[in-house]
Figure 1 (cartoon, rainbow, N blue to C red):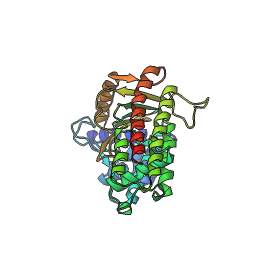
Figure 2 (tube, rainbow, N blue to C red):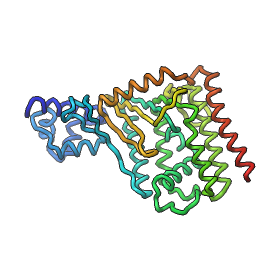
Figure 3 (cartoon, rainbow, N blue to C red):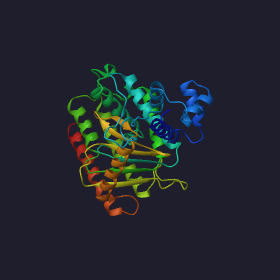
Figure 4 (tube, rainbow, N blue to C red):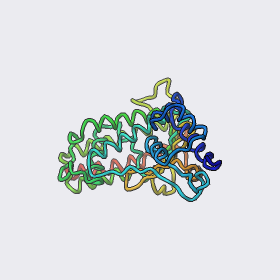
Length: 339
């Protein structure tokens, strides 16, 4: 095996090693996935046997890795490969989408170190899933209005229309996110898309029951209140107050600049992944080192221009969340007049 090829393979397998859980053996993982003996797996790790194209494809698909080495200076060239899970017009496709988020969070939680940095044009998806009516509304809206799933065609919003399995997966997503150290960057407009979705459904007659509209709006208010509490304590927690054992794992910034799109940078063990939104809520993911470096630099520069609203920033936090609470109250007043 040529020296340059050996270097590429070594880099690729070292990146794989940083992705798999620390208590898993790279040899065992390779042998099982590629259906070869442990000796054959060792030879690939040592660079004595070249990985075939089929084997690289199988590894990338299984671990959701991107291969950015061929002709690109070990991932530092101008070519970036993304993983992209295409969503079809079906409820089953959306379930797979949620399960992918769940599996990603499980992998991140099992890693050390771990961190999620979220530059949020819209409220990060995780927060909606703590509140049943809001969670049901978002799942219904995405399935009906974005995916055009035939299961919801011609239907009005009814929380009972969402399968219990989706609600359960969503709640598991939220519970996992609570445990992962996170930095979020919001602007005063971050909540607008959710409010506009609610308003659009009301104006289009797509609520089966007005009480459901009020319940969803109340859930939004509770979500904002909980995020404000978490920012005040610097930790994500369940319930009204954090437990004595809660760690400082939540930092929130207010950006006066337009964020532009949802961008996420994840650190999990020795690997990093950049997530970029596409087509409303779908995501393209890459582990390309140069792209992750560029994303990290963009986020750092954005944070320099932000106002911290976590911890002791009481005045800034109050003013920031007051803007959002005023928007919610204004919408409540409008719906009350249209009863």
